Amino acid sequence: MSTSIPLPRRRRATPLATGLVATTLAALLTTCGAPAESPPAAPPPPMADASRWGSRAALLEANSEMSVAELEGRIYVIGGYPSTRISTVLVQVYDPAADRWGAGVPLPVALNHTMSASTGGVLYVIGGQTEAGGDGPFVNTVYAFDPTVGRWVTRAPMPTARAGGAAAVVNGRIYVAGGRPPRGSDFAVYDPALDRWETLPALPTQRNHIGAVSLGNRVYVVGGRTGAGFDTPTLDKVEVYDVNTGVWSTAAPLLRPRGGVNAIVAHGLLHVFGGEGNPSAPTGVFPDHDVYDPARNAWVRLPDMPTPVHGVTGAAFLNGVIHLPGGGISSGGSSGSTIHQVYRPATSYP
Image (cartoon, rainbow, N blue to C red; front, side):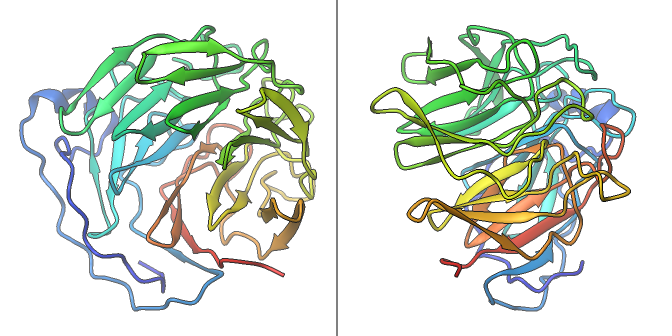
C-alpha cells in the first residue's frame, strides 16, 4: 500500500462475521461461525506530519452511496452498491491497528443511501432505499448493532421514510437532516435511551446528498443538491441548528456549491471533502478539501484530495487520522471504488 501516515496502536477487537468478500455471499455470514481474517499487512513507513494525505488497505468490495461510522475503534462501511447499482447487505469493518478489512454481520435488508451514526457503544443505520434511483423506494427503518451482542436489532422507525440525508450526534441523541425529494426539509431527532423520535423544525433549505456534523450543541448541515439526481442544482449553503434553542441560523457558505459531499469534525474544525456537480472536471467530481473554523466563521481551501470522490456519507477520525473509504470516482452511482484515503489534519490553519 502507498502511505506514509503511521498506523495507530492496536485497540480491543470487536466481533466480526466471516471474512467473505463477495456481496452476493454476505447474507450467508450469519451462519458461518467464527470470522476468518486475512493476514495482517505490513505497516507503512512512519510519517507524522500534519496536513498530509496517505492511503490504507483497500475495501473488500468497491462501493459508493453508502454510509460510514466509527464504533469502538473500528470503521464500518454500511450497505451501498458497486457499479452494478444493486444494493448490498455487506458491512465492511476496518481494524486500524491491523490495517485490515473484514466482513461484518450483514444488514437485515440490502440498502443504499443510509444515514448512520454511533452513540453509547451502538451503531445505528437509519433510513435509506432498497433500490438505486432517485425515486426510491425509501424506508424509515432503524437498525441497531451492538458488537457485544453481534446482531442487528430493529428499533423505532423514523417519522418519515427518506434516503440521502445525513446524521449527527449531540449529547447521545441522533439528529437526521434532509433527504431526497419530497423529504428534503425533514429534520428529526432519535433518543436511543427512550427508543423514540421527535420531529423538529424543518431544515430551511430542502436538500439531499449533504454533509452533517455536530460542533458543541450545534448541528451543521453542509452543501448538497436540490433534486433527486446528480445533475440537479447544487448548494453552498451551511445551515446550523442549535439544539438548546431549537432555532436554525446560517454560517459562511462553502467556497463552491457541491452535492454528494462528505464531512467530519477534527480538532474542533469542520472538514468537507469531494462532491458531485463539477462542470470543469471530466469526471464531474470535485477534488476540493475545505476546512471551516467556527470561531472565525470562515472557510480555508486546502490542497485537493488525491482521488476526488463522492457518494459517501460519514467518515471516521481515529488516532489523529481522518479515514475516507470508498466512494464514486465519477458522477452517478456506477463508479464505486475500493480506495481508502486518509488525511492527518492540523490543529489549526491560517
